[in-house]
Length: 90
Image 1: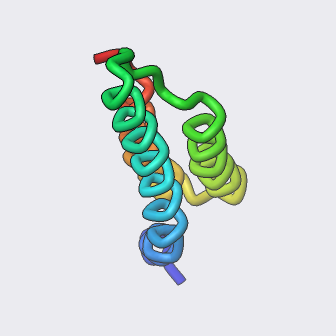
Image 2: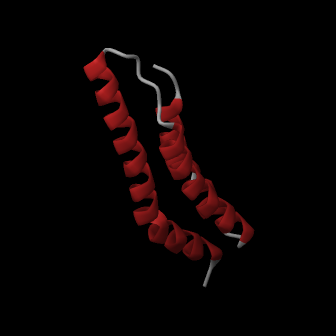
């Protein structure tokens, strides 16, 4: 099997994991922002939840890089950047 097909299959196989990790991060950040808005406090991102989601995505990318699937590993930067934007102050 050509390496490009292996990268494509790896990306498609990891889409559910990426969707769960990014969805969990968005949910945690959204609930924290909602709770802060109810009390009138500024939004502070939940570090444990977002850090855990980032760690899952980064570990998948590192494993892909280690196995030689560089294209699929580079694709893991997209959900990682989506999670990092939740950590940035507003």
